[in-house]
Figure 1 (cartoon, rainbow, N blue to C red):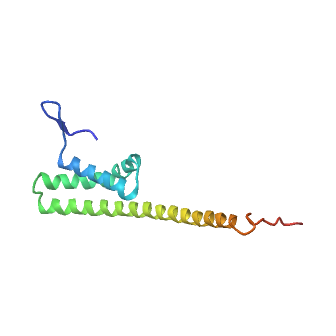
Figure 2: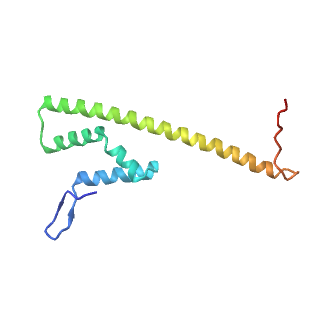
Figure 3: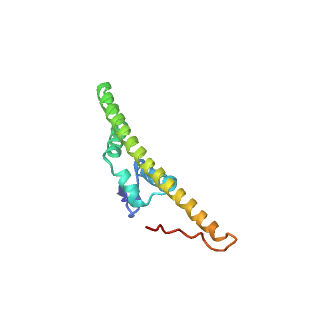
Length: 129
């Protein structure tokens, strides 16, 4: 992450928004096991940019009530779209997890069959014609 600015001695200076982004990155990495590349895909979406822009505009001053309504409508739409994207991602992760669980069960069963009294796996019968 590039610093927002630099101090006199060349120190890197980060804003509160920068630190919040780092926190989001860490959460995605730890909670979902995402790589940095996967985190970038999530955080570089239009929805996240809209939410960041709305947050910045609210913090920059007191927008008029009409503008607040516009901003909140934008934030709601962006947040709903982001939730849908995350739900899709989580559904794909759940499907992958289920595949892995099924594979593990098949592998364990095959391993148990090797421990049968005969000491060999059951043979498959080849159909004849």
